Length: 324
Image (cartoon, rainbow, N blue to C red; front, side, top):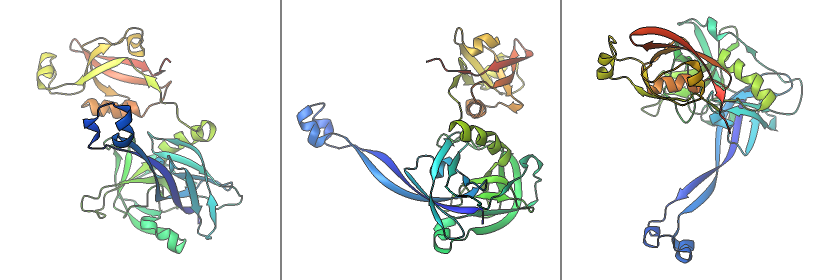
């Protein structure tokens, strides 16, 4: 009963490029007839969510409700509520909603650090809008296939440390809970791989311990402070660079510039440093370090292992709020 269906209405903007506009340049007269147009379109979509507390707080994905103009939540009691977006975070793909009322059923949050590969898990949600028809969530069962999976950054979402499961997760399941056999939420269903437009046993959930760290700030401030800067410019290390710097194989990223009076400058970075590890995550490429650093917040201190002059060093980089 704590699982909900979510229907969302959002306004999306599209730019229509008139093929004839190239012939009239910036002419203001002809531009009103043949110029490019920005069109706004109302788009309806659906997803899943679950109640966190008896006073009506609901968790779902940012890609479900983060840009919503209007949100309707349906409970298993067939009651429908207009929901308010309390806060959302693009990076972690988490949104917090609120409906008015009291004594709502709610879930218990578990501990995703205790998840064991091979343990049974249950995915609940609203695949293909079936909740809208039946007022009941769909349940699928599987096992934890892998943990700690890092996915490619997608649409500004940084999916790190994900729980992989073969419990069937389909379109519309996003935002629903992944539960252990005690009924505790261990993850938020977020990503599916569907190369053949169907479930192939590859679903991914955001670990609930990561979600816990986001919820408090969303409830208090409505957002996560991620507007920070480092002052570093980097490039991936290829075989030629690795050989020049005496590395056994290509690894890490090389620092190509350090901005004066920047967090990186204060941390002691120098051009030519090779970053090979950030907070325990091995760095293999620019995409890799972008994913690790992009998941952080302003004020965080990152421990970076570097290679300088064939020596291993450790530097601490504080992510400072970007100056206005």
